[in-house]
Picture (tube, rainbow, N blue to C red):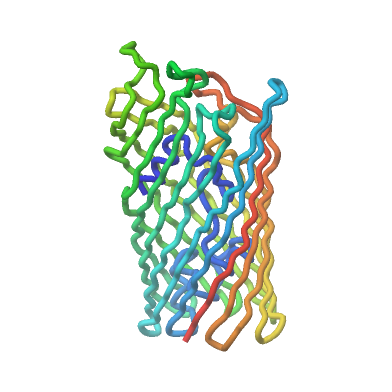
Length: 412
């Protein structure tokens, strides 16, 4: 988690393009296929993430869901005024999820989830126009979430539990637009850290007015990631003792990054072979005001972000085509938390539309194969980051992401 923190801290999530900020919305194959809806959907152990209160309504005693997605992202940058353009190298992220629930008795269920809500691997060309903001980043963050679910009645339940986070990150950028050593090599700062951990919590509730209608509520707390004594490497700086120019070599750094709280409310309605779902997700990004790093060599890096709270509107549908095949589709609208003047290439994302689909194939009554995909299309945007020490950096960004996924659902 230290890495995740670092990554984001240092203008690092260079291209996490599947959700607001540096969030990665791929927490379950069945949910992904239905527009990432799930807070009111009772169909698998994916409820550990989406709404632990619903676990107690699963029919089977043991439920297990596992899945992995291959996320292909692409970001294009162009500044026609100066006649420059760049494109990120093709990269593939592989966020995974494992969920399990066990029904202790009719009124209590236990669950455990392991998933990756933050992760990215992005590489811009060496010394590209925005290299003073970010060159390369590799991020992995893992959440471990035990939960308990209580049925207070046939119509109402609650659930929740602690969240443990751990992760790692590698990141580098050039020091500024012009600094080099005597041989002309660009001055560079690299970050490498791992083992940053912290705790948060989740809580959920579910109300079932009828057998076919489920209304859900889920909240995940803000988590503050504090990196202390991480490793930072300064290279290719001029060999001088002039003020403001750090010495080459390895030093430590301290930084702090909040992962925002999230609130989701939603519902699902079943009608014959059909299931319809809607989720509204609110992400409290306003806590992300700045990425400030303090280095052991006495230098520092102040990176204002000034994010705003944002919303995601999710729609999903499911159809039981046969006894063995269930079809799913969905759509979601994801608002950007980035405000004008703070659009940095670490997270080059703006308002986007997500289109999803998938299916489940029941191999046996106990085992099913789940498949999903999503295509995320970002609106083309002319934007700039005006708070950098090297002056404004702007241009036109075009981004997209595509992710096929596979999973298994087991119940008994």
